Image (cartoon, rainbow, N blue to C red; front, side, top):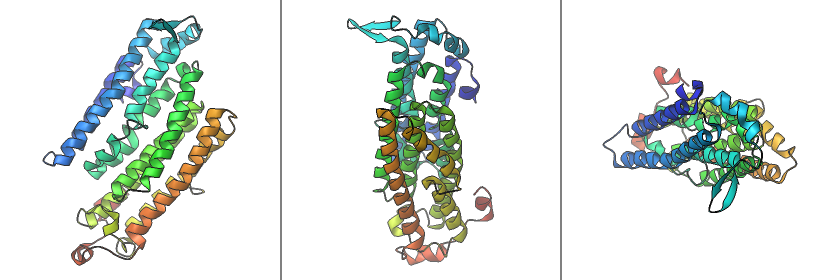
Length: 346
């Protein structure tokens, strides 16, 4: 709330850091687990890289505009968009607004798990599943997308920053989707799908369609939370087993959870008349109609990513629910569908 409602960059930065601290503490919820300790420290360190870029961007804003008030900066942005406003470094001139936008974008890359700083997100699955649903699907990882959309008046004065944003987002969506098809851990597959969908949101901002990006952000929050909570129901039923290869045949044992996972997966792949269809399809359509190199690059990588998204979603459903069972007899005998307190959130 502090990041969203703040009217200046200092308040946004404090809320930004607060979300990162909450993520660290929640990943380390089971503090006696070595893997949870490592994942929490990794998340904190990787976030610091992005936070350093964001802090430099805020200092750059103060240096150029003499204020950190968001509305004042946006009102003055047009006056400082000319090439003669620059930062001088190593006898080279860099357009001031472009430098500021790229530094702010580095902050978004760290928070929204874009390519290069994405490695913390799959490891963050060591935390409890409700934490993954709330922090790593709906709130923290989308803070970077929100920040770019919030700073859109600045980004619109920097074509270079928009091109960088588009290329990074498109590469992230493709890379995360191709990596997701190779994962066997149930929650890691969903984590890489989150990286991929964040890539769509970022390159939607890069092609100057911020409203569509935020629309996909909202849709993604709902269906990804459904997927994570359904995965938690499966893990709970299977006595904390997360390897999909050791599951199978659960559709008859967990019919409600299977139905919820199917609905979430259809939304994820953009099946017609599901929520993901109305936002993801529009993003690809707008990228195609940009008629620029970066727009075409985003469209083709995004289109290929849609195929891989469909593949790993079907693979997840097949290995978990439809394939012949490959788990221990004691786990099958103990297996039960979600109790009422778990079913209500789903």
